[in-house]
Amino acid sequence: QVQLVESGGGLVQPGGSLRLSCTASGFTLDYYAIGWFRQAPGKEREGVSCISKSDGESVYADSVKCRFAISRDSAKNTVYLQMNSLKPEDTAVYYCAASRLRVRLIRFDSRGYRYWGQGTQVTVSS
Image (cartoon, rainbow, N blue to C red):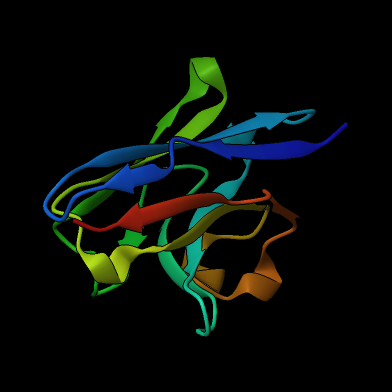
């Protein structure tokens, strides 16, 4: 069964850090570009970061540049999103998604992603 599962969300104070994990079952993440998206209440889903399937090229939304970092662990079939210096506006449900297409082609176009996880809640609040 093909499945993506996110984990690592939670409640954190402003300025804190979290590391989200996106683990796949039923397929190998190395053959897919992986994107992280988020959706806050009352807002549209937006792309946060994505990483290519081949050379590790990564892309970040302007709102998270220099704060978030995306990475892969092939041995664990997992992609991570390290989130530092978190702000209240980072509060959202975070989703990971997988695509066979090139990051340069799809970037944060959700239509290009085939598999999606169920999401993990991130709340940044004091």
